[in-house]
Image (cartoon, rainbow, N blue to C red; front, side):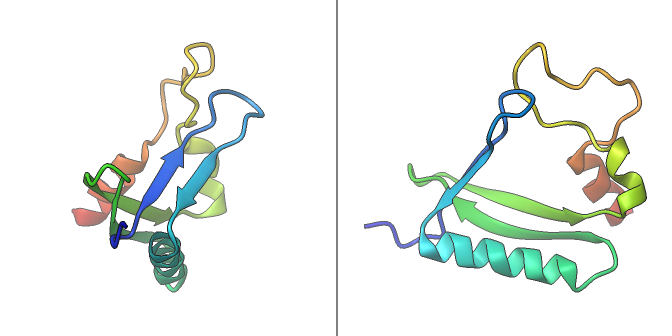
Length: 101
């Protein structure tokens, strides 16, 4: 039995495809708390640690941006024909690095 907060996240493959968040209760509660934490801010990030079901750990960064900035965020598709092609985009890790400066 796994006693760690487990979350698996799958990006949409392409346009109009589903994305998935799958986790155990502990993982979903921790994700819910991370989202609640960032919603208590006007913008910014919060980080929570999770595991994959194989036992490997990772950090998930939850980021709140203003509506006016959403069209600047890189799209998350993984299909080669649907990947980000715009030259001027912001990736989630760029937002976190900016916040740390």
